[in-house]
Length: 470
Image 1 (tube, rainbow, N blue to C red):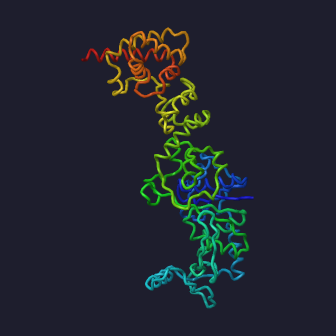
Image 2 (cartoon, helix red, strand yellow):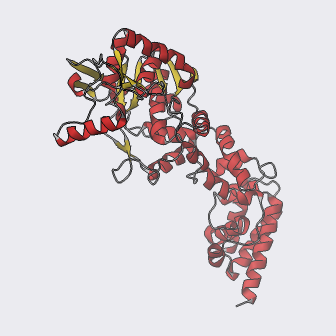
Image 3 (spheres, one colour):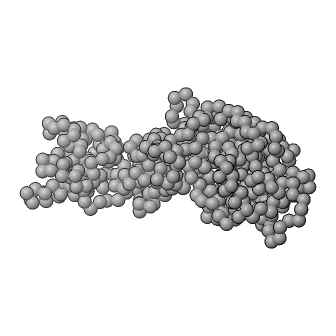
């Protein structure tokens, strides 16, 4: 069975680079009917915070990236790591290193002066003398000194690294706590991981970890290192490019499915398709189609994809995501037309849920003034008679629905010998307060007869006042 995992460190927010790694791992497990695990790598006690853990869990929940196992916390597995380290020591595959930080820095400086790659020189690898006093040793793994390590990477292709290039990595700090390279190997072994899908910033760790797997007698999983996501200027993705907490995208009105759709297309493709449902992502995803080159983050493309998802997502799902933004705007959707009908009408234009909530205001709240530019252009004295005429027509309609409203506007324009625009635009400004809205007949239907007639009265009063002041 395929088993994958996402293993973030809770030392900051969950950003989109991490989400893409989680998504690829999640999709690969789903595609192959396998299992997906969430593991919190919290051994860095100084930098790990509960707030970061909470943000990771909330982000995964919002995105719908469910997991079969977890969250599993590394800090709850210290006894297991200690046992493994002790086993390596007893088998002569690990050793105490007494080199002080000052000694190590001096060693590296000398190596740099000689034009060599700075790395630990193995000075305590076969040490049998009396250890220095007052030095708390670290524990290092005895990396093989001959041969090569072959990484059969599912994205990058084969990568061969000479063991002579690898030093003896630290597997336990001087306070006894295990290091990342040890814990990740033990965890992935114990949890039966078959595929490790992660960012290519881990490639340098992989040959060391493969040697650890072999030393432990553990099966070596398959690796897939995903290229980084770069900013629009080609530099490492940062906050100014959009590398913010994934929850900020929720706050800015993006649908989780849209964000995942955007991220899956950063470095992966399926024919020429741009818009994917979650079911399609699972069906089509494979590691063979992951690009080996970095991808570039583009906020405009994300907005476009979000707009496409707003247009097509099931209305009940859209309403559940829209509701918090309505509340933020001080709108009570229970006091007015059904939010599902309003959302269905507004979804064609909105790029974000914030835009949709802002556009929905006039369906639920009356307004005190008209948008200045629209009123100046369309609520002119010449519009008074057409507005009054259409108001009378609307007031006498036998039923209040879009079809009847459209016919009333058309009949009024025809009887006055004017184009639909000469009456439609003043009517739009009158009943919505501005110059932008969905089709005026469907909009008017949802606003309701009484509110529309009252707002036309307000528009007529505005026109009279404007006329009197000229």
